[in-house]
Image 1 (spheres, each protein chain N blue to C red):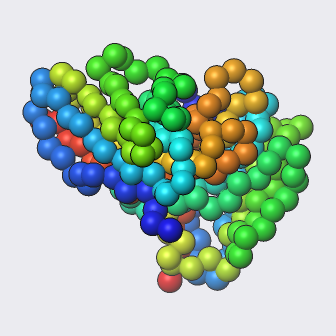
Image 2 (image 1 turned 180 degrees about the horizontal axis):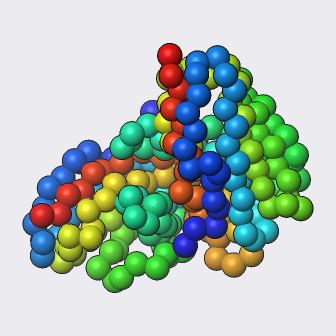
Length: 114
Length: 114
């Protein structure tokens, strides 16, 4: 099975712009979670989608949003980019977001905001 | 917010030696997962251990879980230079909003010298 894929892998944007990142989960996985990784804050949970519904959300401002499509692919959007949004954005897919299911991560999208 | 904390922050050993990393967490969990991350890349899933399990093996990896002490350890036997990476433990939370959300520690940076 192909793993989790994320596009693009690298992105450079300027402050004030918006960006959309894409994640394709492992075939058959219906849950997609997003994380932000920075040297200062480590890995922080953004949100989780299952069957096109956002079921869980981390403590991020409303500029961070996402969605999931019927084929389980997910996108996240960051509007009005700030320098502090520079980070590695990781998505993870899971068979089910239950109590004992592994999350498998993609290679990440490295976002640099200048 | 971080739920888990890895110890030590950094570990440097010679090839062939064993590497032990520890993880402590704060709240009750359903399961705990260990991940590896090579510099700036995605997280690779290593092993999941459930709260009712005490020990689990996978190849050169041995994971233990002590729920009474809220701690876990990851042992890598006969380390190789290719094991050089950051290692993270990730927990869910047995109560509260857990869907699709993992809590990560800051990680242990393991360096294995040839």
